[in-house]
Amino acid sequence: MADTLLGSRIAGGNTAYSRSESDYYPTPPEATKALLDYLKLQDKSQIWEPACGEGHIAEVLLEYGHSLIATDLFYQGYGEGEIDFLNSPLRSCDWIITNPPFKLAEQFIRRCHEHNKPFALLLKSQYWHSKSRYSLFKDVQPTDILPLTWRPDFLFKTRGKGSPLMDCIWCVWRNNGDQNTIYYPLTKPIILRT
Ligand SMILES: C[S@@+](CC[C@H](N)C(=O)[O-])C[C@H]1O[C@@H](n2cnc3c(N)ncnc32)[C@H](O)[C@@H]1O
Image 1 (cartoon, rainbow, N blue to C red):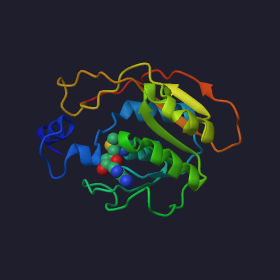
Image 2 (cartoon, rainbow, N blue to C red):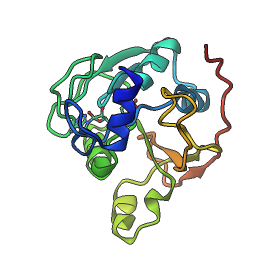
Image 3 (cartoon, rainbow, N blue to C red):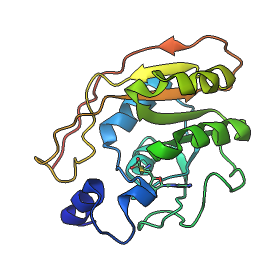
């Protein structure tokens, strides 16, 4: 995607569809690598990226040797489009991993939980700092909360223009019956960009 289009999407400008419609923020690869380095999934796990955008998480999953199912409500040149995660059946997978649209985060959490598979979602750090989400936490308690010790630059494709303001966490639900939540900060993996 042209950098100007990406910048425009994030700024909420006119695009093929508006940012408010899609809540599109491509995840920089180091955020996904930090998660995968922590999770140490079995080789060749089958992972569903159900809000894949242009494939920024998906490509890292492939790089780590996993099998991929990539879908999105809006086709953005990657994976399968017109698949509403909130209303579509479970795909055959071992894990679900995505950076969901923020305004639908709770619905994504509940839908992943219904699918009864382990899952990991990238959320704003203050996600749980809300009275209205206390019942969600009690209903669907994460097994791991993993603060990123850096601010991911969602404008990384327009290098030099991003000045990240948002702190983020990966939240993991391992679906293993654990009653407690591990809190473990992730350090930033080194990525060489050309
Ligand atoms: C924050 S972006 C993340 C994109 C990609 N996962 C990444 O990390 O680079 C959120 C994505 O969710 C998609 N989306 C929005 N509503 C959706 C829905 N109901 N089902 C599936 N995807 C949806 C948007 O089109 C957008 O690509």
